[in-house]
Length: 451
Image (cartoon, rainbow, N blue to C red; front, side):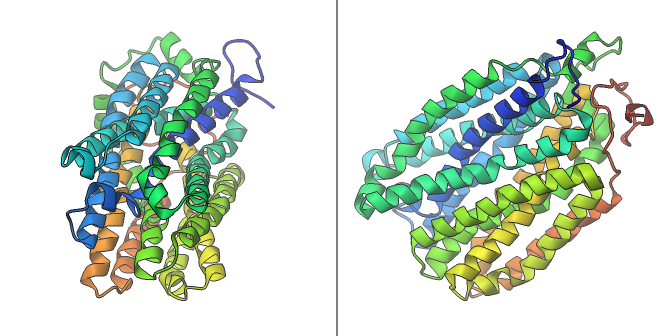
């Protein structure tokens, strides 16, 4: 395997980098998505008991959205520091922050114990989690991809794309196991706290692995280059690459919206609207996320063979098609059919997410790559990802529980995303180690293409 390496011909470093990035990000997503799962089921009763059921559910889902809203702040801060100081140290900081916030969340008293301070502290910890994940998501992607050989970037990108579904499997598997061995009263009393507290041990493992990874060759090349580096990578990214940031953000709005529609709102829809058991909902999500892992790997692999655009167009067209039959199949309450359609839907959603890391990384020069990628990625989650579960609940309540207004909204978002894919350039073959001038245009410079 060919490799880009500036610290000797160590063929193991790219593998170490992608391993560290994948494991660390998966663990951070585990904590983040664990909260998402219980926000639709347990937290309304424990932290918002004074509200009527629909309002309590909306308030609980809103705290999930607060975590997503904090991600741009983490992306901006860590993007600035990552472009100025390097990728590696930021990755150690973000995984530590997530671990501490998760432990405190597992120890947090409920509304019955400390009153209004319970939801206030819950929101504060969610902000810390969101901040950490905002910096982590892009930083880990760059740490792996800037180490990768050009012909394997898509495959590494697919490995990074499986972090989210892998965390969903771990989180829902843990909750399913706890629900099976504990009574409902025990689960609501202390069972939901266990995975939050235990996740800190896993975070220590992630830190240990990341300590063994070198700084990326692209960042080292940037520091050695005679090019004058921007004082503020964030301002430089917005000033010189705002069209690219906007296009990538609008593209990723669809995968972000559909992801949270499936993994957050669907669980609430199955249990609250259709009256199915929580265990059935958790099991359906686990099956869907297994499919999503294969989807992410397939997306990354095909993007190396076909190019980023063709592979993304396939994924976008498939999610648009599946969207039209998703809720009718859920309404059948046939468990096998529900698992199949959720698997297909999440699989093709994550197919696109498996390409997102490499597509974003290849769109920016090194000196603003962290800032530009983070702004586009977290912007999409802020615009539609976090609000989607709340929007879905509100649309269902306003339409007499008809899913078609929600389907229409998601279809419109999907079509905008597809249009952004079509108008964007093909970036496969871009040299991530080349240092472009700060004033380089927003199109991919020919000087960055590997000859």
